[in-house]
Image (cartoon, rainbow, N blue to C red; front, side, top):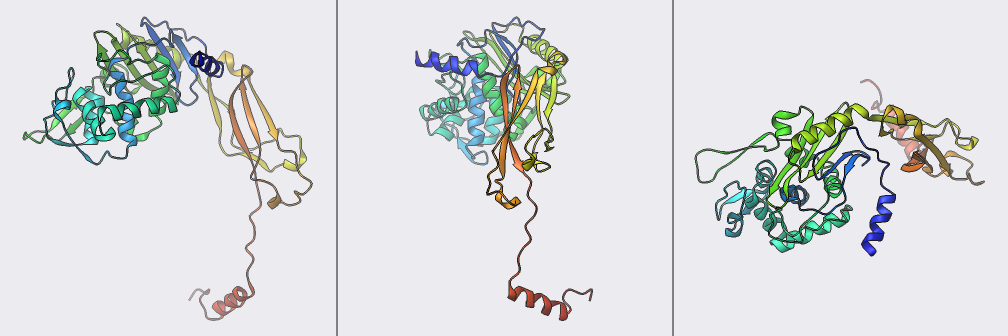
Length: 376
């Protein structure tokens, strides 16, 4: 009951959403804009389902955030025995954690997932705890992880299309994750052979099918069927697509992206710099925003924005610039009468002149006489 209430509250505060023109064939699907989290398309996006190897997005970001990418993990027998897709690690070998993450994301190595979990979490159980803790922190309320790879060895391992988009949005804010997820091919040393391991990314959207794709993760098990998370960027618009149980997932993703890029663009709602719309003369030519704010919208929606400026009431004790606080209000951005952003409004103060002491004054005179401040 409590989780249902929480879900209802979160749903009420989600960014405004509409349906893009494309209709995905996958069982669950979602198209989300990266910078704002606005949902541009959804289909059964909140139903809990098995997710297969897109689980590894969480495994990868936890490995990256551990700060141990430049350390070497010792591969255990348990890691080598992991079923399914493999990067063919050898028991006892030592391999950079960074290379393990590449093997995880590009080749979907289940042996790599276990080796990462044991190195970062101390054990599989310890790492799974970290996975669920991170899921809770970033708002994946309909997700539970039971392993680091997504194999069907636990009943309580599931997520939703929406939650996986939330996870991907979080991960894509990390520069290292973006680099690894967007890598088409990676070489890693092979300790037992004279040649390097060479891993080509399984994400065909990235390697051959869609020029705007920037990364993602594939997945498949017999029970989950095909699962896919990808990202794409075009004309400054960054999108995330997720499909669960998608027999035609490559085309579903391309269709969602093409529809999203055609219908939507980032509309600049407020600009950095001085704010002219304020009524209070105390803030005249002094109140300003440090950043722009843009929001994804179609041409038909560009008139649905509204900005309110909520300012502090000036105090009688604010006589000079130095008396004003640094932040004097908020710019509240509304879209379809729903708040989507709150930006701080700053007060521009004149630079304070540095007061020199009596000793500094005579020191300055002495340095001038000595010729230090002349041209030689």
